[in-house]
Length: 299
Image 1 (cartoon, rainbow, N blue to C red):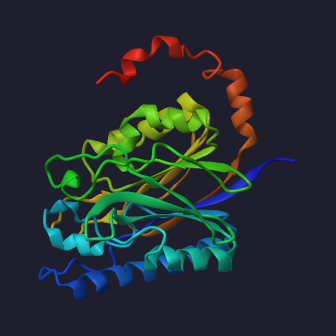
Image 2 (image 1 turned 45 degrees about the horizontal axis):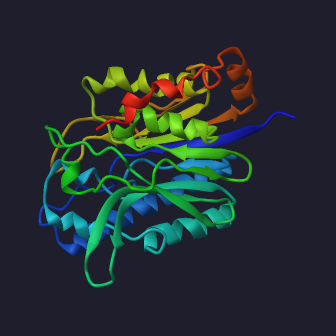
């Protein structure tokens, strides 16, 4: 019997502009609007039969890294005890779906006010259980407006693989996809689908967007799901987030794709039996030469 998993990706424009005054109340309003919008879309995906639903990078707000200000630290929440992840755990339990929930994470390291901040994604099982989290490993910091080192520490949890009971998944966040090493680690540890929630603007990234995820899929013999938000976000107007969220199979073929310019739930069925078939034809893991790769881990 075929192992088919139905998955959905949610690409969405920011629900409200970021308030120029930057008050705590306005940040709460932005978050509330985005959470409500996504809850409705998650429900729609579940009604269409999705077993796994993945949200976009920092799904509950705008891509605020276009500016450098401490006010966005008030946007961060602990994982899993913060209100957004707790809500999504309840939603997953109600709908019987697995969820990947990327948010801005704050970690209270000593209970006395010392805090670390990460770009993270919570992974929730179909029973609503918190299965773990991934913290973005590679942090960009470049003009125009991708000032992520100001907000996020590099992830320190490695490249975990999460067992959903019916398949095994990994998470790679946005800029991570430029680095093949972590993607290979997840494949070696049994990942069958790797989700890549992102925030990518039009320009040179258009070309890379259609190359890198399929290349990771081919090199590792698994499915990749690439998610991108849509729209230009006020007040920064950094550029046009161009959507085109898609799934690709272990041969690098794009299976389903969203539009460039509007909200969309991109849903498709993934036949996980294809993984073994492809790996028999292209036995890259068998033919690896790890004894020759020492230079990869040199500083």
